[in-house]
Image (cartoon, rainbow, N blue to C red; front, side, top):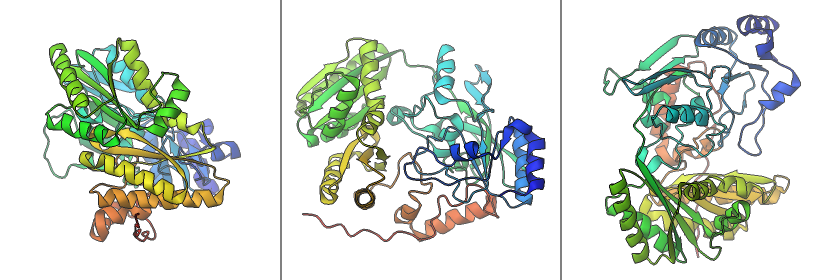
Length: 471
């Protein structure tokens, strides 16, 4: 429970209606998109500008009250669950596009703007902002920055970190820092901009971002390649890259995902296929035509059962929507859906999918796999029921082995969802004890009293490595 004097000061900063400690507000901000995680905050506050954020932090720091900053709460690693109570700072009032600079091809925005709304506005000006997380219709730019969100276009265009070139942020002390700017080159000291991107709200509260924009592609073509052989699909991914072709989108769906998505989207997808690759190329028309034809040849050489090129932009959008709806479609099957992400080298995609299937059979759980094949980022997704404690325990055991398998194949425990609360016990598996200590030192420098999103990233205890038995 918050001190009454502090509560009065917070209300004075943002206005009576923009600080809430009623049960409805506390419950609404006690969870995010991560299933089976919930913890009540002590208050919820809605700042309107950087000055208010700074004043809020000065007061919270004085009373040693923790704070969790959040946007829409679409997070999938428990990153915005207030496990230590305190105040949840919701950034939705700070939702303006402050400037679009056509001379420098940059946009300056507040963190609370919805990603899809920002992209739509930028495209209306004849420009392009490539990061496109599947949650973009509800997620915010600030949330994307906190998690370094990826998306379907990540293979060719990169992820959020590649487009954030300047930040304004408030430290735990209430001090304001500014990093980077409208610059394509800047090596003045440590790259604090890149450090804050993906820091999950543990180092500072982002209040403004300067984003790089690029010219839009002149044309696009989309195709589906369908395989009865999983390894054929995986080899196709490697061979496309080996041919020095970088598609705008190169997505993968396994058979369980194909079936569920087809039930949901009614696209007539081939339900007897072991894998589908959704491939999109963009750029100059002549180059796109050449690349698509070469990709078709590679697919056929790797024994694709069928290859279809979208007949129209509307058809292409339906195919892309089907891939984006994979999580939604799977979520209809059971009361609880656990969407994870693990990344392996592209050449190991088939091995990883087969390992996921082996692990699912071992623990008798249902796991479908889809993801960004072009960058090796897979999303094994378990459908279960939180009320069935035995099954949930088996799902958790399965995911532990999946993370171990990813590392064994040269990969990582998370490609884009972040560490948060869920992956914290496994972080040492990836970066080692020394890496953890370096990160703790950075956290101490930014936030010496551990007020910013405490309980995330650093686990009290590292999970023991799994001993995988196969066969």
